[in-house]
Length: 417
Image (cartoon, rainbow, N blue to C red; front, top):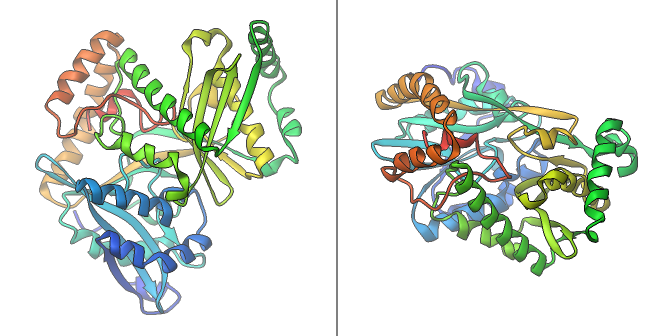
């Protein structure tokens, strides 16, 4: 079970230098590593917001206050400089001990910060023994992007597990401005969007707000959270994030982004001053990450969520953002605007007999069948079934499903995790 990775060639492969591996286990150790961490973060490539120092410190502070999760951040250093950081944490669910992404279930991607010029596979091989010694039954790498350093590191040794998904994304620098980008959208789609907007404008004035004003942030964050809670209840869906008792307190931290060090942006599409579609997210190294969105179903015929994404993209152009990440899942309303998607999948590495049984019997065989059966149920019945499953679970029940309008997996899969 522990054979996929070997350390034999790793030390010579990492620039021919001797490396040290250590684990950060406390908030104090995280804060002490800030200079080393941010230096690597500046150099690392990819969609690494959820592995950034500011994000991980914010998550570590949240965990320290609640005392719910043990940090296990694996670092590889060379000549006192970090060349790889893999932010993980230990979680316990019943008899299972899981090593997973540091801020799960709140983060959207799991990745590894890796210094350019070093092989991610070799860096990960150096971490192997430290990961095995974590005491976990299995390692869960959730939402790994196919273009990430961690994906390269895992290779074929830890294959994907579970459903295929994808993150719709846009490289804004492929077009000089929003108007030019808009011309790349199918003419029929543009016409449909114009007609939908015109229909709304016949009933009132449409306005769009975007920025980091405290009042805007507080309003959008609160409304989107509550809107998602209501939507999940209606649809009979579930989310590990939303049913986690600490998620509300975690998202509330971003109402004052100065305290997190993360650029947080809120956007609101209004009709006569009433919000009909809203979204908020983060900007890190020029990339905008959508996090939570919501829309008013009263205006469903005009597709307010789809309309709003056009305004989100326009605002990103105006603010100098270079790329937009709409996060999983690859929902149709996102694909209207995003020309590209990046495959995203979970990877699971069993380390003990318990981990292997859970992986081979539950994850690989029983869970896909159970998920298919539950998803085929009508929303009302599905809600009852999921409620029964969660009532015996080990996470506090807050509500059900998802982060970015849908994100954090598909519907019932979290209830069956």
